[in-house]
Length: 588
Image (cartoon, rainbow, N blue to C red; front, side):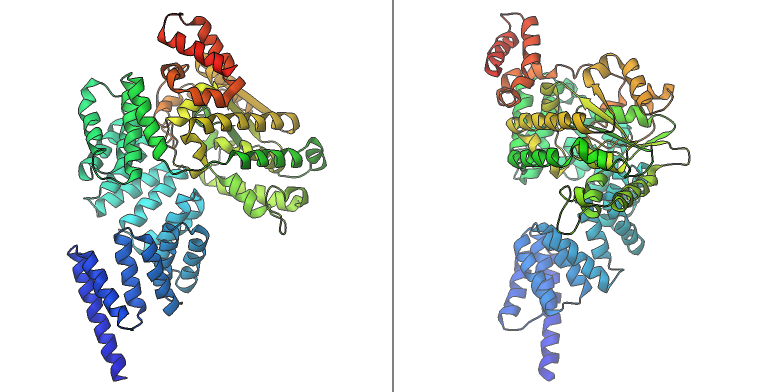
C-alpha cells in the first residue's frame, strides 16, 4: 500500500514536471521525462495519455496512437482516453475504428466534449454534415467558447446551407478567441459564400497577417479577388512563402492561389506552372478500372425491365430536384437560378443520396447497388422518406422544390428514379476542354474528386461520365433535361426559362437576377455566380492549349470537334493556330 501511494505521488510529480516543460516549449524534454518513468517498469494510463498528447503536438501521430492505445488498454472504460484514442486513430487513417471508438466514449459519458466535438469534426471531414451537427451542437452547449467546437459547428452549418447561423457561430468563435487566425479565415469563407467580397477579403487578409503560413487563406483570398498589377505585392509575398519550410498541403494551397493570380493577369504559362505544381502535390487517388467495373455493374442492374417491375415503388413527391453533371459544368449557376425562385430552396452539394442508399438499401450481405434487385418497396419508401426528412431543414412552408446539386449524383440516378419517380433531373454538359481545365484549376475539398489532379485522369473520367449518362438516357423512366453550359450563358433568358418550366414552376424575374440573391452559395463557384452572366469562361482552354496534350489524348474523339472548330478559325501563322493543328492531328 505504501509503495502504491509513493508510486502515485511520483506519477503526479512526473505529470506536473512534463506539463510544465511542455508549457515552456520543451516538448522533447517532457517526452523524455515521461518515457524514463515508463522504462522504470511502472504502468500508468495517465502517463501514456500525456505522451499521446505530447506526440500529437509534435505531429508524431503514430507514436501518439501507440500511447493512447496503451492508456485505453489500462483503463478501457475511461471516456476521455477513448476520445483521445479515437482522434489518434483518425489522424492515422483508421476512420471506421475512430468512428466506433468515439461512439464507445459517448456510451460511457454522453457529455464528453472531446468525443462530441471530435466525432462532429470527423463526420464533417467525410461530408456527413447533417449528422455532424447533432454532435457539434451538443458540444458547444457544454463548452460554448471553445474554438475547435465553434469552428467545426460553423463548417457544418454552412454546408447545410444555414449561413446566418454559421456566421453567428464564427463570430462567436472570434469573440471568445480574438487572436485566432482560424476564426478570421472561417469568417472570410462564410462571407465569400454570402457574396460579400469586401468583408471576405478583410477577414482573410487579417488571417494571413496573423498566420502567414495559412495556405488555405491565400487560396480563399485569391478566389475573391481579381488580380491586377496593383496586387503584385501579394503575388510576391506568396512566392516568398513558397521558399519557407512549409508542410506540403500549405504549399499546395499557395500554388493554386498563384495560379489564379497569374491567370487573372493573363500570364498563362506561369499560371499553368503553379496549377500543375499544386495538383502534383495533392494526395489523391483515382482508379479508372474500378469505375469501369462500376459502370458495367450499373448497366447490369439498371435495365428498362428493372424499372418496369418496380414502377410502383418510391414516394409520390415532386419536391426533389437533382442538378447533375461534371463539376464545373454550370451546376452551381443552375442551382442559383432555381433557388432564386420564391418556392425553391437548395441543400447545395449534399451527399445524402449516396449515404442513405448505402446505409438503408443494403440487403443481407449484399451492399448497394448490388442489393437493389432484392430490396423491398418498403425499404425504398423508408429511404425516400428519410431523404425528404433531412432536406426539410432548409424548406419553408411555401417551398415546392428542393435542389440537390451534387454533380456526381449521376452515379445514383437509378436509385433516385426508384425513390422519387416524379423527381426532376437536370443534366449540365460543357465543352470537355473547358470543363476539364476548370476542374484542374480548382482545388476541391472533396476526397471523391481525386481524378481532378491529373490531366489524363480528368479526360478518362469525363468520358466515363458520358458513358453513365448515355446509359441513363436509354433506361431511366424519369425525364432528364439536358442543358449545355455554352447555351445557358449565350442565350440565358430562354435557357433559364426552360429550366424553371421543366421544374413545374412559373417564371419569376428573380431567377434572372440570381447574382443579386441574398442566399448563400457554398461551392467552388461561390464568387462567379455573384456576377451577371458572362461568357469569358467559354473557350478559356485555348489560353493553355500548349499544355493540354495529355488531356486531349485522354478525351480522344470528345475533344476533336472543339479542336477542329477552333483550328479552322485560327490564323495559320499564329502560335495558337500551330499548336491546334498539332493537337488536332494527335486527336485523330
